[in-house]
Image 1 (cartoon, helix red, strand yellow):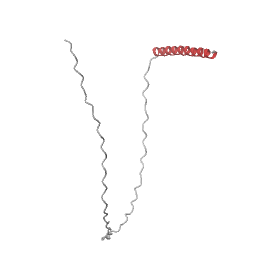
Image 2: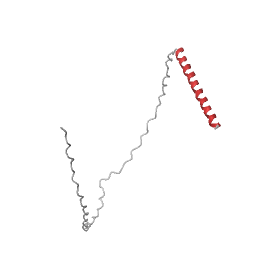
Image 3: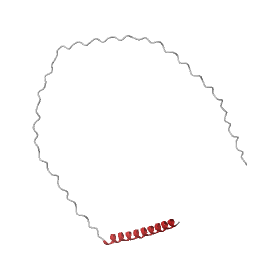
Image 4: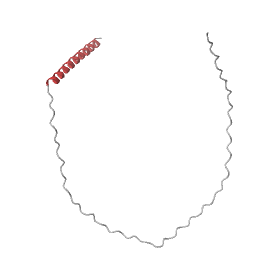
Length: 118
């Protein structure tokens, strides 16, 4: 019980301290806003981009083009063997699915007309 009482007192003290410190901070901020004049900052000067020296690249050496043989007569293509035809037996017939009997429907009855009072 004593620890609960002391932690309650500590929490109460901390909350009072935080309230008082926020009041002081807001008063200080208001005081600074009312007393200082804002001068615009000096414009920034950015340094220029340095120029890079121009480099001279040596020319790319040219390689001799290889000479390819130029055959005038192409060799004949090999004969493709013929594939024999395969005769497959006919597919068996698929039995039909049994039909589900239909459920009789209940006729919808409309309610009787409402009685009107003259």
